[in-house]
Length: 83
Image (cartoon, rainbow, N blue to C red):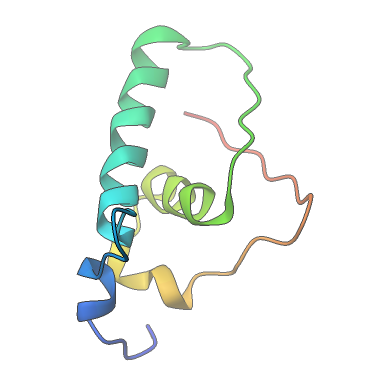
């Protein structure tokens, strides 16, 4: 069961920074790019926590509203996915 969250958090921007929804949209575009450019190839993706969590949500087909209940990444953690 997803944690009850404040939906305004997803749209909140600090100064010129991206909101979680902005990052999620960027992750969706990145997955599309990967599928078109590197289909059936092994690649390594290194990034920051928010982007990598959104990327995992996209790759696993989850809803972005589960972001705050998703298992957070640890420092230097490695996760493997198949497109």
